[in-house]
Image 1 (spheres, one colour):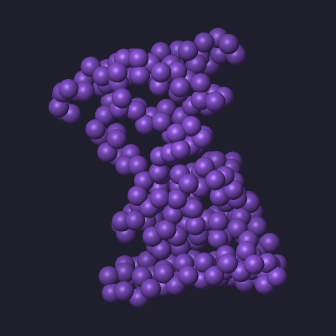
Image 2 (image 1 turned 135 degrees about the vertical axis):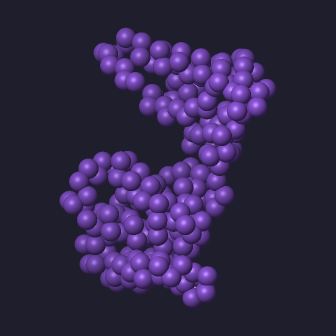
Length: 244
């Protein structure tokens, strides 16, 4: 369904009305078993300034006593001192490739990377870094250690190199275990080598990894987003959707 009209014609109000009706159905069905419900859960990504529609809907939910709502707003930490934890990594070995691909696609959409052939470095290194973090069992918060090359005159970059080396050791340690999937080993070793090559020196970093680092910085430079994505156990969206 697509709504097309000029500014001020009521698209947002109509959308809010539709969401309210969905909420009404959810409230009416919540006492029924899952297989008897006629309603379904909904996810709304609000593009309006300050999340106007989302907060209108939130107020409506409060007014009718419907409290099965999850609001994700990074600025809420300024109000309530809390944020919902989100971890897009699925640590199940059978889902790692898909998990990395979904995350790479999300970054591509977020940063408008329309043609991957024109951004080969970004595609290569985002995949490599996501895979390394994934197999290390870490989160997107650790992306910060992949934003600056080593410079012995800069103490912060020395620390970042130390953490990158520790992450590589963590992945290597997991690969040495007998239960590590054999068909993943060569690929993970390749990604470790790609990251090592990109951070070999400053010229390599500038040429190979610079464009990727600039995009990563958008995430890690925001303390609220960094906190949201810094949890190994995030919100279980599958359960939220299935429970209604």
